[in-house]
Length: 129
Image (cartoon, rainbow, N blue to C red; front, side, top):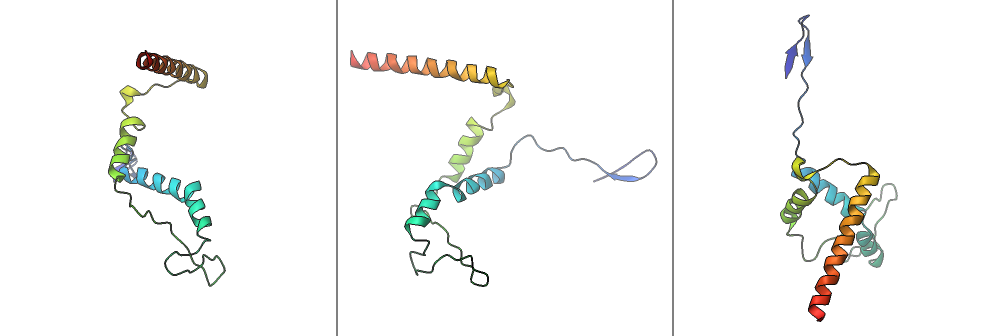
């Protein structure tokens, strides 16, 4: 996209970014979370950093690099559901967001936690009565 200035010079016009985070960005963030997770690292450690199928060992030696991947045996068939949940709860519409200073934000969360605890105690007391 090109726009002209008053002097007639061509200048690139700035594109406006869409206010919605793309699904691909969410999936990449989840993938990074998995790649650096303690669970993945523990699986590698328990396997002795060796392939369970052929026994090849992970290596970073120059000329003999060998990477390993950790496979989910049951698969991850809920990527779309997870992404939808992230949009619904975290990357929500502006009407559901409020900008606060850290002190006010903490105060609101403390009040919400107290309210949830009170509701929980009432439910337990009601079931136990």
